Length: 540
Image (cartoon, rainbow, N blue to C red):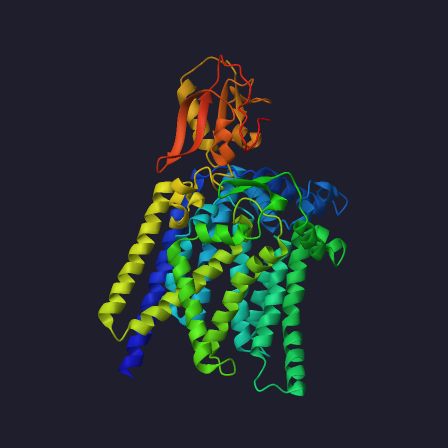
């Protein structure tokens, strides 16, 4: 009894630490969310949200949203919420978007904690929580990847409720059914790829079929599961069509969206290992390779530990007597690896690195939490060894966190040691594709021209390698975006795809981290030249 009480206290204390860490992340996000620039997609995404709202306000008569670029192929759940908040709150709309995205990102971290805790206990949950938070692509993306992060959060919570429901099949508790339905709706209300959760539900049901299997009993079991989970599908469908009106026009539209994504052939270029590709022509290993080099090595190590535990269990006991924990580990691994494997096998289009597969990162963090927890448990008889491993793990987490601190607010550009960190990735891999340097570059130009103390109304033209909307949001009215780069007085560019080298000029400001240029501001006054003929692009 004393031993059980001690274990219960330890679990409770670990949970308290996890909740305190989550609360700390909330405070941190409140302090940091103003530091991030407007991403290239945010203007059109927010406009899409406004068009969806107009569609409903007009009584379904204003159908402009169905002809707005290709946005109709996406759900607008986040954008609708952001539009609603912007109509109520007296703050800049993009600050509102960044704050909302950050809070949802923290909810995703909480989802990783909850999932790992469900499978392997409080310590696994705490490790998963920290593992996800020190992933630069996720933490840095929380603030302005306003579709990728909400989708990732919905997916990890969908997996959590599925695992809970799977333990009680064929009669899961209604709160788990409802929770899964809400997350299914949230995921599909953002991206059609959220339909993966329906496939995952089928996998959970199949993994839960009683053994030994008899056809009659199996059929009854499957029928009962289907009936019990049907309300979740209905809830998900209602949320999806509310957030994604185009999906309601025809039952197969969500599937049509997925097939449309698979055949995107826009003239968008991306870079990997120094080679430039069109998005439709990237090599099959593009996405898994980017995941390999963007996720911290310590997270990869933990995930491999979890897979090793699974393989060891199967080798010892076979597939007929697999403990529940190993079944759940196998499911989480499947949920993390299947989308990446499908992308590689189908050789689908891809760009901006692993951004569109951000939703597998929380699952990898869950596996890391489970794997390291299993390792520490296995070493517990030798306390000195377990303590040493725990110390090394804590040091690795601290080191990765320190890297993110030094990268701020460009955490999403973090690369691990497989390519030599940011220094090794520079000009060979995706860098600041969202042009997050914009507010900092504009601020540097303001200071260079002394606009704060300058009473003159002289107008300067600025060439911008990025979205002009983002530039105009930060720039003084005396700075105007030039329609052509070569005619501009100044030039602002990130080092992404060597855009900073396309136009000559005297460098007056450089934004850099770890000695690596991320963006530049150039003074071009008095200069007339042709754009440099570099292989990565050309001036517009």
